[in-house]
Image (cartoon, rainbow, N blue to C red; front, side, top):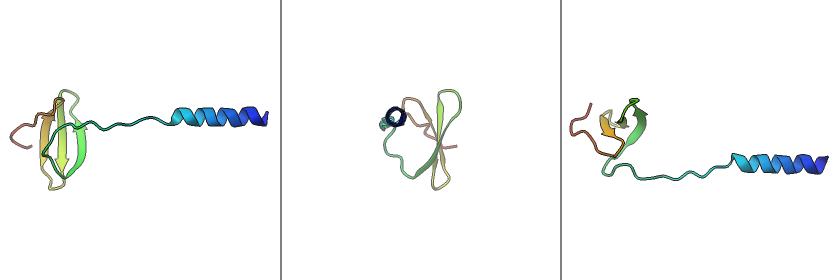
Length: 66
């Protein structure tokens, strides 16, 4: 019984690990402290300076910040 319980604990804990990979979204942006989705294709990027940049899912930024 102890062996089966140990095996189940190891098996379940092994399932909880997942692979995370980072993919570049846009370049030339610095000091991002938060990212939020508007629920459509817009993504809001908040810079440390307080400027909010508006981008789309393809990584294109709106030329005028929010």
